[in-house]
Amino acid sequence: MVARGVAGFGTASGTGREDGATSDAPIRVLIAEDDTAVRSALAELVEMTQGLQLAGAVGDAKAAADAAASLRPDVAVVDVRMPDGGGARAAREIGARAPFTRVICFSAYADRSTVLEMLRAGATSYVVKGVDASALLDAIQGDGPGRVQLPPGELDELIADLATMVRALEADMEAVTARTEHVLGETRQRVGEVLGVLDAALEATERNGAVRADAALAELREAAAMTRAVMGSLNRSTDSPLGTEVAG
Image 1 (cartoon, rainbow, N blue to C red):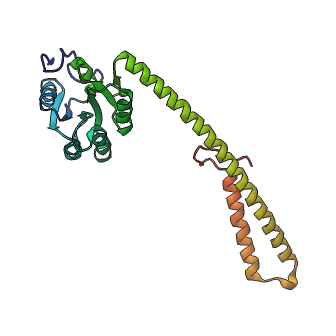
Image 2 (cartoon, rainbow, N blue to C red; image 1 turned 90 degrees about the vertical axis):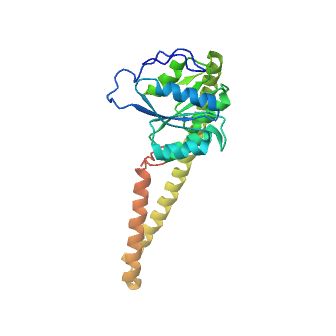
Image 3 (cartoon, rainbow, N blue to C red; image 1 turned 180 degrees about the vertical axis):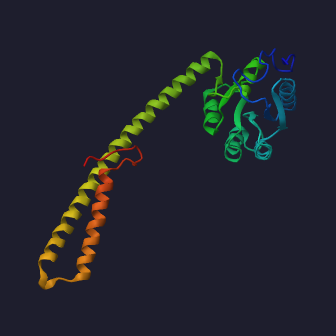
Protein backbone atom coordinates (compact mmCIF):
# COMPACT_ATOMS: atom_id res chain seq x y z
CA MET A 1 0.00 0.00 0.00
CA VAL A 2 1.31 3.48 -0.91
CA ALA A 3 1.14 6.13 1.81
CA ARG A 4 -0.80 9.18 0.63
CA GLY A 5 -1.81 12.50 2.13
CA VAL A 6 -0.13 12.03 5.54
CA ALA A 7 0.26 15.36 7.35
CA GLY A 8 3.71 16.88 6.86
CA PHE A 9 4.65 14.68 3.89
CA GLY A 10 4.14 14.46 0.17
CA THR A 11 3.12 11.28 -1.62
CA ALA A 12 5.36 8.33 -0.80
CA SER A 13 6.71 6.14 -3.55
CA GLY A 14 8.02 3.46 -1.16
CA THR A 15 5.74 0.44 -0.97
CA GLY A 16 7.46 -1.93 1.46
CA ARG A 17 10.85 -3.62 1.91
CA GLU A 18 13.44 -2.88 -0.71
CA ASP A 19 14.13 -5.43 -3.44
CA GLY A 20 16.12 -8.49 -2.38
CA ALA A 21 14.70 -8.72 1.14
CA THR A 22 14.67 -12.31 2.33
CA SER A 23 12.13 -12.08 5.14
CA ASP A 24 8.37 -11.52 4.95
CA ALA A 25 8.25 -10.31 8.55
CA PRO A 26 7.33 -6.62 8.81
CA ILE A 27 9.90 -4.05 9.86
CA ARG A 28 8.94 -2.99 13.38
CA VAL A 29 9.31 0.77 13.86
CA LEU A 30 9.52 2.82 17.05
CA ILE A 31 8.70 6.54 16.78
CA ALA A 32 10.33 9.00 19.19
CA GLU A 33 8.99 12.52 18.63
CA ASP A 34 7.85 15.10 21.19
CA ASP A 35 5.49 16.97 18.84
CA THR A 36 2.14 15.21 19.14
CA ALA A 37 0.98 16.06 15.61
CA VAL A 38 4.21 14.93 13.98
CA ARG A 39 4.29 11.78 16.12
CA SER A 40 0.75 10.92 15.00
CA ALA A 41 1.62 11.61 11.35
CA LEU A 42 4.68 9.34 11.56
CA ALA A 43 2.68 6.60 13.25
CA GLU A 44 0.03 6.86 10.53
CA LEU A 45 2.69 6.72 7.81
CA VAL A 46 4.16 3.56 9.29
CA GLU A 47 0.80 1.89 9.83
CA MET A 48 -0.41 2.51 6.28
CA THR A 49 2.82 1.39 4.57
CA GLN A 50 3.05 -2.22 3.50
CA GLY A 51 5.89 -4.10 5.16
CA LEU A 52 6.06 -1.82 8.20
CA GLN A 53 4.60 -2.31 11.67
CA LEU A 54 4.33 0.30 14.40
CA ALA A 55 6.08 -1.01 17.51
CA GLY A 56 5.39 2.06 19.61
CA ALA A 57 5.39 5.87 19.76
CA VAL A 58 6.93 7.94 22.56
CA GLY A 59 7.66 11.58 23.24
CA ASP A 60 11.06 11.86 24.96
CA ALA A 61 14.57 10.44 24.94
CA LYS A 62 14.29 8.34 28.09
CA ALA A 63 11.03 6.77 26.95
CA ALA A 64 12.65 6.05 23.57
CA ALA A 65 15.53 4.15 25.18
CA ASP A 66 13.21 2.26 27.53
CA ALA A 67 10.84 1.34 24.69
CA ALA A 68 13.69 0.18 22.45
CA ALA A 69 15.06 -2.01 25.24
CA SER A 70 11.69 -3.64 25.92
CA LEU A 71 10.15 -3.75 22.44
CA ARG A 72 13.32 -4.48 20.42
CA PRO A 73 12.15 -2.70 17.25
CA ASP A 74 14.08 -3.07 14.00
CA VAL A 75 14.19 0.70 13.52
CA ALA A 76 13.81 3.73 15.79
CA VAL A 77 12.90 7.05 14.14
CA VAL A 78 14.24 9.69 16.53
CA ASP A 79 13.81 13.47 16.65
CA VAL A 80 16.80 15.64 17.61
CA ARG A 81 15.13 18.06 20.02
CA MET A 82 13.23 16.09 22.67
CA PRO A 83 12.87 16.28 26.46
CA ASP A 84 15.12 14.19 28.73
CA GLY A 85 18.33 14.51 26.76
CA GLY A 86 17.31 14.86 23.14
CA GLY A 87 17.95 12.62 20.18
CA ALA A 88 21.65 12.18 20.88
CA ARG A 89 20.95 10.64 24.29
CA ALA A 90 18.23 8.47 22.79
CA ALA A 91 20.56 7.24 20.03
CA ARG A 92 23.38 6.43 22.46
CA GLU A 93 21.16 4.57 24.90
CA ILE A 94 19.31 2.69 22.17
CA GLY A 95 22.69 1.60 20.79
CA ALA A 96 23.71 0.35 24.23
CA ARG A 97 20.42 -1.29 25.25
CA ALA A 98 19.06 -2.45 21.88
CA PRO A 99 22.14 -2.82 19.66
CA PHE A 100 20.25 -4.43 16.77
CA THR A 101 17.89 -1.45 16.44
CA ARG A 102 18.86 0.96 13.66
CA VAL A 103 18.46 4.60 14.64
CA ILE A 104 17.22 7.04 12.01
CA CYS A 105 17.27 10.73 12.87
CA PHE A 106 14.27 12.65 11.54
CA SER A 107 14.80 16.33 12.27
CA ALA A 108 13.97 19.87 11.22
CA TYR A 109 17.64 20.77 11.76
CA ALA A 110 19.97 20.45 8.77
CA ASP A 111 23.09 22.14 10.18
CA ARG A 112 26.32 20.17 10.08
CA SER A 113 26.97 20.24 13.82
CA THR A 114 23.62 18.62 14.55
CA VAL A 115 24.10 16.00 11.83
CA LEU A 116 27.56 15.10 13.12
CA GLU A 117 26.31 14.98 16.71
CA MET A 118 23.62 12.46 15.79
CA LEU A 119 25.91 10.35 13.61
CA ARG A 120 28.49 10.22 16.42
CA ALA A 121 25.72 9.21 18.84
CA GLY A 122 24.91 6.20 16.68
CA ALA A 123 22.31 7.27 14.12
CA THR A 124 22.79 5.41 10.84
CA SER A 125 20.68 7.77 8.73
CA TYR A 126 19.66 11.43 8.91
CA VAL A 127 16.53 12.69 7.16
CA VAL A 128 15.34 16.31 7.27
CA LYS A 129 11.68 16.99 8.00
CA GLY A 130 9.70 18.41 5.12
CA VAL A 131 11.06 16.00 2.51
CA ASP A 132 8.83 13.62 0.60
CA ALA A 133 7.70 10.69 2.71
CA SER A 134 9.54 8.30 0.40
CA ALA A 135 12.90 9.60 1.70
CA LEU A 136 12.03 8.55 5.23
CA LEU A 137 10.53 5.24 4.08
CA ASP A 138 13.66 4.48 2.04
CA ALA A 139 15.75 5.01 5.17
CA ILE A 140 13.47 2.79 7.25
CA GLN A 141 13.26 0.01 4.68
CA GLY A 142 16.91 0.07 3.67
CA ASP A 143 19.15 -2.58 5.25
CA GLY A 144 22.37 -1.43 3.62
CA PRO A 145 24.66 1.52 4.48
CA GLY A 146 23.01 4.49 6.11
CA ARG A 147 22.16 7.66 4.26
CA VAL A 148 22.13 11.39 4.98
CA GLN A 149 19.25 13.26 3.35
CA LEU A 150 20.21 16.95 3.42
CA PRO A 151 19.80 19.98 1.14
CA PRO A 152 22.61 19.93 -1.50
CA GLY A 153 24.49 22.90 -0.06
CA GLU A 154 24.49 21.50 3.47
CA LEU A 155 25.51 18.06 2.21
CA ASP A 156 28.49 19.51 0.30
CA GLU A 157 29.64 21.38 3.40
CA LEU A 158 29.18 18.28 5.57
CA ILE A 159 31.33 16.26 3.15
CA ALA A 160 33.99 18.98 3.28
CA ASP A 161 33.93 18.89 7.09
CA LEU A 162 34.23 15.11 7.12
CA ALA A 163 37.15 15.27 4.69
CA THR A 164 38.91 17.73 7.01
CA MET A 165 38.27 15.43 9.98
CA VAL A 166 39.69 12.45 8.07
CA ARG A 167 42.85 14.38 7.15
CA ALA A 168 43.31 15.43 10.78
CA LEU A 169 42.82 11.84 11.91
CA GLU A 170 45.38 10.59 9.39
CA ALA A 171 47.90 13.15 10.69
CA ASP A 172 47.23 12.02 14.27
CA MET A 173 47.67 8.37 13.27
CA GLU A 174 50.98 9.12 11.58
CA ALA A 175 52.20 10.93 14.71
CA VAL A 176 51.12 8.04 16.93
CA THR A 177 52.86 5.56 14.59
CA ALA A 178 56.10 7.52 14.80
CA ARG A 179 55.91 7.73 18.61
CA THR A 180 55.06 4.03 18.88
CA GLU A 181 58.00 3.00 16.71
CA HIS A 182 60.32 5.23 18.75
CA VAL A 183 59.11 3.82 22.09
CA LEU A 184 59.36 0.22 20.86
CA GLY A 185 62.85 0.86 19.54
CA GLU A 186 63.99 2.29 22.88
CA THR A 187 62.36 -0.57 24.80
CA ARG A 188 64.01 -3.18 22.58
CA GLN A 189 67.38 -1.51 23.13
CA ARG A 190 66.94 -1.53 26.93
CA VAL A 191 65.83 -5.16 26.95
CA GLY A 192 68.83 -6.06 24.82
CA GLU A 193 71.14 -4.34 27.29
CA VAL A 194 69.57 -6.18 30.23
CA LEU A 195 69.84 -9.47 28.39
CA GLY A 196 73.51 -8.82 27.69
CA VAL A 197 74.21 -8.19 31.37
CA LEU A 198 72.25 -11.30 32.39
CA ASP A 199 74.10 -13.48 29.88
CA ALA A 200 77.46 -12.15 31.09
CA ALA A 201 76.51 -12.71 34.72
CA LEU A 202 75.21 -16.20 33.96
CA GLU A 203 78.37 -17.15 32.09
CA ALA A 204 80.61 -15.81 34.86
CA THR A 205 78.61 -17.66 37.53
CA GLU A 206 78.70 -20.94 35.64
CA ARG A 207 82.48 -20.71 35.14
CA ASN A 208 83.28 -19.70 38.68
CA GLY A 209 82.75 -22.91 40.62
CA ALA A 210 84.16 -21.40 43.79
CA VAL A 211 81.27 -18.99 44.25
CA ARG A 212 78.68 -21.10 42.50
CA ALA A 213 75.28 -21.25 44.18
CA ASP A 214 72.59 -23.41 42.59
CA ALA A 215 69.71 -21.15 43.70
CA ALA A 216 71.36 -18.02 42.33
CA LEU A 217 72.24 -19.80 39.10
CA ALA A 218 68.67 -21.00 38.61
CA GLU A 219 67.38 -17.49 39.26
CA LEU A 220 69.73 -16.00 36.69
CA ARG A 221 68.71 -18.59 34.12
CA GLU A 222 65.03 -17.86 34.72
CA ALA A 223 65.59 -14.11 34.41
CA ALA A 224 67.53 -14.61 31.18
CA ALA A 225 64.77 -16.83 29.75
CA MET A 226 62.09 -14.29 30.63
CA THR A 227 64.12 -11.46 29.11
CA ARG A 228 64.62 -13.45 25.89
CA ALA A 229 60.85 -14.02 25.76
CA VAL A 230 60.25 -10.28 26.06
CA MET A 231 62.77 -9.63 23.30
CA GLY A 232 61.09 -12.23 21.12
CA SER A 233 57.72 -10.57 21.67
CA LEU A 234 59.15 -7.19 20.71
CA ASN A 235 60.70 -8.63 17.58
CA ARG A 236 57.43 -10.26 16.54
CA SER A 237 55.23 -7.45 17.76
CA THR A 238 52.21 -6.88 15.58
CA ASP A 239 49.77 -6.06 18.34
CA SER A 240 50.78 -2.47 19.04
CA PRO A 241 47.91 0.06 18.76
CA LEU A 242 48.74 0.53 15.07
CA GLY A 243 50.12 -2.94 14.28
CA THR A 244 53.73 -1.71 14.25
CA GLU A 245 56.28 -4.48 13.79
CA VAL A 246 59.76 -4.18 15.22
CA ALA A 247 62.50 -5.60 13.02
CA GLY A 248 64.60 -8.29 14.63
